[in-house]
Each structure stands twice: as C-alpha cells, then as structure tokens.
Length: 204
Image 1 (cartoon, rainbow, N blue to C red):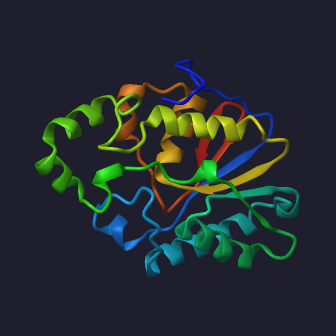
Image 2 (cartoon, rainbow, N blue to C red):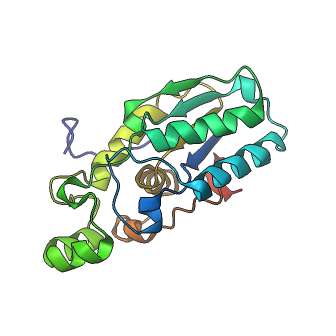
C-alpha cells in the first residue's frame, strides 16, 4: 500500500466536478484489460467523446472557468481534444499522472475470461476484495483511491476530470461511501458522464 499507511483515503468537494471516462477502445469492446497499456479510441469512442462535448456545450457552464485535469494516457488525451473542439477557446489541459488508469500487472492484455481461466484463485479473490488485493503485479483499488483523493484535495475551483474506469469506481466509492466489497460491480459507462456536487452523483 501507499506509504501514507493504512488510513482510509478521503476528500470533500467544495466545487462542482464533472468526471468523464474516455471513449471506447477496441480493448474495451473485447473486454480486454487495458490498465497502463496506452491504447487509443475506436470510432465509437470518438463518437462518444463528441457526444459529451455537445452535451457539455448545452449545459450553460462557463467552461473557460473550469480546470480540465486529464490523464496523460492517449485515450484520455484524445477524448479531451474532441471535447475541446466543441467547447471553444480558452480551455487548456493539465495532465496529471495521478489520473492514469490503475495497473493490472500481468493481466493486462488478457480478457476477463482468460484471467478467470489462467489465474482463477487470484481472479476470485480480486472480485470480492479489490480494495486490498491487487491483480497479479498491479494496483489495488485502495491505492488507486489514494491517488485520486490526493488529487481531489488540491481542487480549488470547478473542475472537469477526464480519466478512466478504475478511477471512476474509486472516486465514487470515496465520495458516496460505497461498500468496498462490491466495487468491481460498479458500472463505468462511456456513453454518459458524471456530475459530482452536494454529496450526490448525477449521470448526464
């Protein structure tokens, strides 16, 4: 675990936060674990990002007044660029390593079916205790959550985060106080994005 110890990470939000997962990749479509593998989006993913941009443009926000914090991975960068093209000038990314997807270690590149077949015990344990159990050589959700909490505690104004499915689960677990044992069952849609405000999460 992180050097900060075993204390529960946490954060509170004083400002509105939008959280977008990157658009679909071919590996998403194949149910293949990506993690730190730097894949790019497919045509469906680019259409999803364009949809997000169009929806955001209609929300009435002053996006130039938001901080856009983006994972440095290709699929998140491309999502940002497509959205920026629809929101207009004055929007610049701040790439943050803490928003990278969690590592799946040796499992990266495998499908979920392959993980279950090749490492059934590790797979079964991870499904029920992903907060403290890591994929083979990867990160636990507890470690991912600490990264996100560290980032979130530095938020000083309205923010848009463009990141990944693992970060989405970890952020909701902390913000909503969700049961850590059911974390892997949380949906991480790419067709919609989240607005976190006032202790609630709204899907848009």
